[in-house]
Image (cartoon, rainbow, N blue to C red; front, side, top):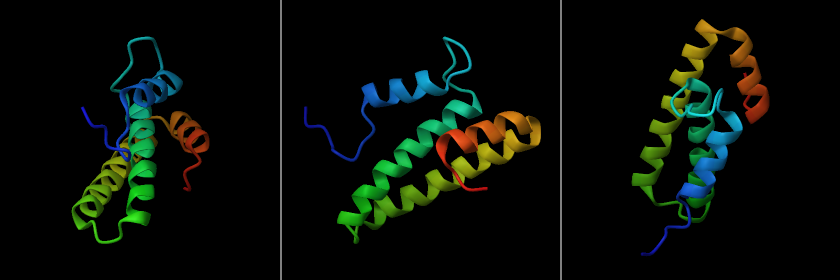
Length: 94
């Protein structure tokens, strides 16, 4: 099976989830989802710097950014402390 270089591998994704999970079986909290989306956005950004005319991937990137923004808005509205921790940990601008 050929692995695409700009995809988030299962090993990388598991590490990201482990680093941002709130408990052992946490895979769906906003904290984890934002961390995974951030990693995918970074990977796709690298790909798009090399492949400027890949408009399908560019559209996917915009959708991921919007999805991450939605999760961050939810987190900010419901738990400001966790929101600040996630933004600081991932190096996202406010």
